Length: 180
Image (cartoon, rainbow, N blue to C red; front, side, top):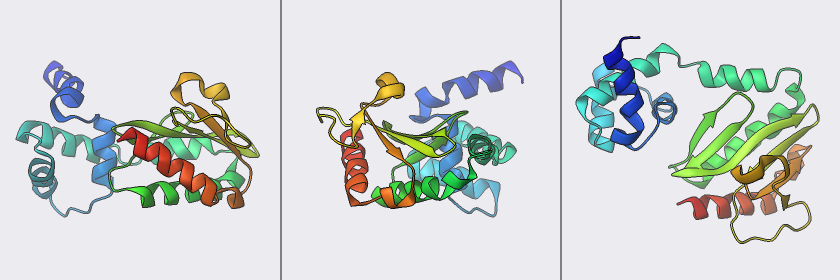
């Protein structure tokens, strides 16, 4: 990678307010038939300058499958957990249109300005959902953060899709609200 491109990539968060990964996810949810449509979208909707918009769009085309590859890797051998994961994403996407979902090597971060939830396949039979709920006392299945440490304030262990119930949806909504 040439030095100028690396510098530009390094400056994307500071100059645009979002990471390159966040921009890639945002663009993956859109449908553009031409490169310049995507560039103009970033410029008009988000105030991104032309140079950064062009770079973001170009780089987003290069590895559009990387997030899915990371998720596939997380759930390899844990495929039975995928319906729970997909249900969690459905709930998260229904909360607000400013949510960013970012796959990492071992987890998926749910972000609204800052991370408010974290989805991690903990075992072959369980997903741990980390939540940031400042000021909320752990109670019942809303446990203290456990292995999440300071990334989250609470953890909910999920072993079935039925556990993605109204109570859990309320906790996600509260975490979303506190991240705004």
